[in-house]
Structure formats: C-alpha cells, structure tokens
Amino acid sequence: MKRASSGPILVLFARTPASGQIAQPSGAVFDPRPRLAAALGDEKARALERAFLLDSIDLLHRVSPHGVRPAIAWEGGAGVEDDSLADVLGGVEILSQQGEDPGQRMSGTLADLFARGHDSVGILGTGTPSLPLEHLLKAFDWLRDRDVVLGPSAQGGYYFLGARAVVPEIFRGIPWGTDRVLEETLKILKILGLPRVTLPVWRSVEGPEDIEEIRRGLTGLRETDPTARQTRRLLAIN
Image (cartoon, rainbow, N blue to C red; front, side, top):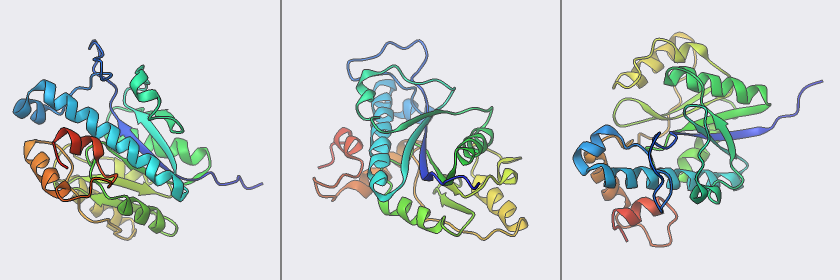
C-alpha cells in the first residue's frame, strides 16, 4: 500500500545557543557570526542573531497557512531550553541536525523527512530574515514537478534548498563556506541532467556590509508589514 503523503515541509536550520552562556532576560544567548561580532561587538551581534532567528521563525508561521508544515532543526542534535522561544515555536516541529558538515546535515534531514512521507522538503537558514514570503511559495510551487530548487545568495552560496528526493551527489565534495558553493552545485545538477531552477538572488547576512544592504531593503516598508519585524526594530527601521 502506498504511504499517504504528509505534504511539503519547510525546515529552518538554526544554531543552538552558545554553550556555557548564561541566558539573558531576553532569552538564550546565541554565538554571533564572527564578522558581525568583530565589526559590531558581541552584544549587538548577539542581539541581531536573535532577531534573525525570531524573524525566520515568523516566516515559518507565515508559510504554514499555505499548506507547508513548519519545522526547525537545531544544530548539534539538541533543543533549546528557552522559555522565551516556547511560544513562538508553538506548532513548529522540532528536529535536530546530524552530520559533520552542511552537506551531511542537509542530506540527512531530507532523507529523514522523505522517510516520514513528506513529498517535498525545503531547507532555509536564519541569515535571510528579510526574505519575501512569495519566494518560498514559488519554490514549493515549482517543487510540484521539479526535483531541486535553489535560492542563490549574493555571496555565491544558496539560502534555500528544496527537493523532492535526496540527490546525494550535490552534497559531496562541495567547498562549503566559500563563494563556489552554488557554482559547484549547479555543475553537478547539469551533469546529472537535472534542470537549473533558481529563485531570485538574495543576500545572506555574513558581515556588516550585509546589514546595510538589509537596512536599505527594509526601509520604506509599511509599519504593518510582517517582514523582519524584529530585525527592523533592532535596526530602528520604521
């Protein structure tokens, strides 16, 4: 008997709070991206990391009414003991990432969720808090008849990966953390005879220059616009 489909699912890949750090009144402490910390200082960079996470979780909730199940996968295989996150994670499935590098963690998550009956899986990081909801909806629309969908980042990687099956080759031998990630992945897809299906380019936050790009992109949004509310508040936009 064919297993009933569990439908599409969007998984947010997120890091667990910094080990050994004491939770602040605002919640758990998250290690900031190194270049952000160097330019802005630890305190502000950590506040931004938390804002990015909250805005990304909000994006999960905004996708949910469109038939896409929300999930979060914590790095390191552990959950987060943080009462301030309990409410915002209501209705979000909690998973854990397993593996030594991003390729292993993504392929393992895909394999697990396909085994559970999901017909398409999207993986998103926390570095694109200003990503429009429409981009994700378009990705899952394409995944109805496309095997792989990528969201290219401006820095040469990708901010989104969507798939209808595990394609092991695109996770092996990739120079993770470099500006060649997207290029090498697209080369492999071409060799495999899979079409290039990409969302609009979007900037992932890695350094202070990316913060300024996000600030410019968010300036002018209406106060009622749900996009990146926590990030906008922290950057004093609107």
